[in-house]
Length: 213
Figure (tube, rainbow, N blue to C red):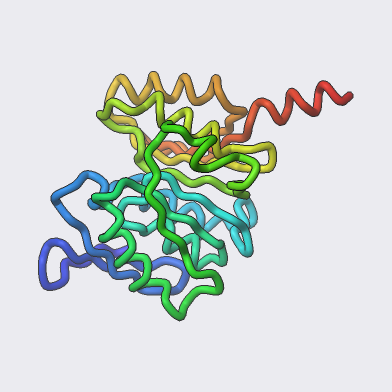
């Protein structure tokens, strides 16, 4: 997928799912800049529809950033809820609506979500159920890795598949990956140098099935 510099350094063109996608980036926030794992995850979703069929599925994206993954998942037929922090949401909403209006069966939703805080009260797991949870480059040098893992676990119900793409940059990334693989049943879908894409399901699901045998 080509990345074109349009009238300024903040506008870029991508091509996924048969559509040109125009993305505005903001250098004011980490969350409003395109990161490499988002591109890797979009390519994976586009080229592996037999593995991850998003058509008609309920999808949650954590740390949606510029919105590219949400846009591609929507173009592939998913009903997506994109989440991020308040300072990112305006640019996220503009990008998503610009590129999905009139193109998608399901209109994407945008919501503010703070990782790990009071989630059972604000997003009870009995109500907020998803077929897929997507996350790209949400692990980097920040202080909320424990909260992120708790959020992933909260939304990864018994019928949910979590797909996490990330480029390994810091020692803390390796620590998170180790904790991630201990928390979920995981498989490595893609490994390209420092770029990895994991598929994960709840360990509680397997335990529940074993207990019923």
